[in-house]
Image (cartoon, rainbow, N blue to C red):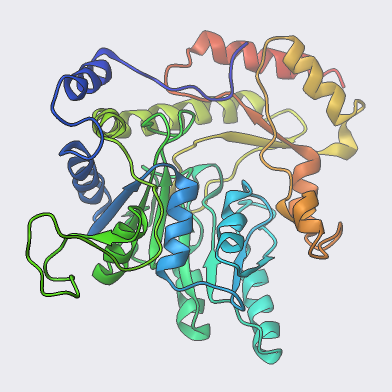
Length: 387
């Protein structure tokens, strides 16, 4: 089976992890801050907070922005459930903005229209979470302009998009957001096994997220409320969590980061090859927006369903039976049973729902060979071209 994504671990990664295992620190030692500094330098951001996974990063980002009961978080339906769940963890209400039919990212016109309506009803969001779907940056500067107009905070869910850029600005710089979140899951661009990171240019937000990831505890003398400078003294000042990243994970991440540029280059080369080989099939191929460099975490196509003689499910199964590990990104979040309990129903976000009915994720990962890719291409031609 050719998987839709796969980690790339080399000897340098193994050596970096073994070095930590043989050191004095395997949990909270020097490797975590070193990884944070390296990512911050790569993305041109001031502060980076490494955590156990990207969902934890989204959660502490929301908490740092004081999202809570009675507040509202908006995101897209075409995403993994974590983009919405982070709002629910804080007790906030969650709502959605439909996606653009070309980029499959949050539709800025739909966002503007929804904001205008929400302002009239006094129901504006406190936080908006655009998602860089498949690794392509959103029109982040337009979202940021609306944030300034309507007073909401912006968290970029860039779980797919480390190494991507918009108009020359690296995703993660937070030029057009309050906080950006990365994922280092094994199928993402670089991996720490599990892991995530929250980035910001706001020092106060960084301090809050640092405390939130570690039980709400601080040992910083400048932040202590009691006049106690004993070396053993610490204070829990807020309710926090155990969301820390280990030195083992951070060492792997720092090693992987050195190859990030090459990974993104290879993913873009694979995407270009797909573009050329699939252009004559009845598929909508990914459209990279002007000014964008996509990280191509995934390569998603959409069936033009009215031109197919076979049902989607049959094509999916035929490809799986040929050893092609296709997948679906994503089933709309608002149609999950949990969110239907809040009154969401089919028909509310038609573009995201149409996407789910025809989207197909094809294999793409740096060590994928041309032979592997030819197998995917030939299987698609056999299953779709004959449909």
